[in-house]
Image (cartoon, rainbow, N blue to C red; front, side, top):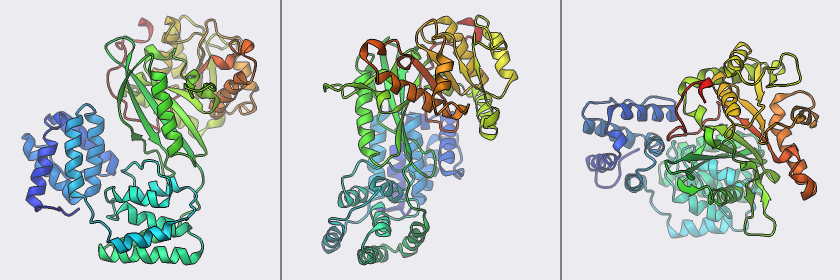
Length: 497
C-alpha cells in the first residue's frame, strides 16, 4: 500500500504515534504474541524484528503496514484481540488508517450512471456478494439493496488485491445481473473506474474468479456468544463473534459490553436480531454460548426471543443452541487431546462411541471416581461423546465429570439439568430420526429436535419434558474464537472440586 497524504515519512510517524498508545506493543513478550497473531491471519510471518527498543519495533512495523494494507488490517484485528479495553487507542488507529487508505470520491456523472444501473436490480444472496467484495478482513453491516450496498462498501478500505470493495461489488453484481445487456453495462462502468485507478489487471483477475465460481448456495451461519464472569458476582463481559463465510471459518468479533445476570437475556436477544437481519439468506443460524465452569448450569437454550411481545419464545424454538467450554478454550495444554480426538472422529466417524456415566451397559463408568473416568476416556480415543449423570455448575459430581471430559479432549458432553438425570435420556436421543442410525455427528440435530418436541406440547406437561432440560456441549476445536479474560476458578485438578 502506497503511503498517502503528507508523504511517506510523515505517514510512518502518524502510524507509529497511534501504535504507541497500545500498551501491549510496549512489552517484548506481548509484541511477539501480536506478531504471531498477525502471521496466523496472513499465513505468513511479517519481516519485522522484535527490537528491544519499542520505538524501533514500531517504526519497522509501521513501515511494513504502509507497504502492505492486508498486514495493516491483520494488525488491527490482532490488537482488537490483545487490547479490547484500549478503545481510545483503537479509535486513534482507525482514524489514521482511514486517512491512509482513503479512496477518491466518484465523479458525479459516474455516480448517477451507476445509480440508474442498479435501480430496481434484484439480487439473490446480496449479503454474501457484499462479503466477497469486501474481502476477508472486513465485516459488512446489513444492507437493504444494491445501491445501499455500493454506498456502504465504498466507505470501506481496499481489499488485499488493491480493489476498492465498491468496485469489486459492481463486478459481483454484473455476474448475476439480467438481462445480459445490463451485465455488460455494469462491467463497462467497472472497466472505466479500474482504468482511472490503474487497477485494470486486478479487476480482470476478479472477473475471471467470479465468472468461474460455482453458483452461490446457502450455508450455515454461527453466532458465538461469550459470557465472561467478572469479579463482582452476577456481572459479565459479553462478547460475540459472527461466522458466515463459504470459504472457511473466519469469525468476526463484535463489540464488547457489560451485562448482569438480569440483563444478559435481553442483550443476547439484540445480538440475535442483528444476526438475523445480516444473515437473511443463511440456510440456518446456530447459536453457541461460551460459558465458564461456574455457569454451565445456565439454561441459555431457554432464554427468550421477542421479549417485548406476547410471543416471547425460547431461542431453541428457532435455532440450534449449544454450549462451548470457556475453561477448555483458555487452557492451551488441553488442546492436544481435544484436537486429536476430533481428528480421530473426523477420519473414522463410524467407530465413534458414546459413553454414559452410570449407564445401562456393563462397561459403563461409575460416578464418584473422576480419576478412573479420565483414565477410561484416555484409554479409548473413539469416545466422542460423554453423558454425565449430574449437572455441572451446580453439583460437585457434575463439575468433576465435565472437567475430566475437558482434560481428555471429549468434544461433546450431554447432561440433564435436573438431578437425578432422566433415566431415559440416552434412549430418547437415540429414538430421534436424526440419531436413529447411530451417527454421533447428528447429536446436535437430535437435541434440537427433542427441544422442539417439548415446545410443541401443552404447558402443563412441558416442564417435565426432557427437551426443556437437556444441555449439549458441542466443542469443535477447528472453529476457535478469540476467547480471553480470566478463567473462572483455579485449576486444581480433576478430583479436587
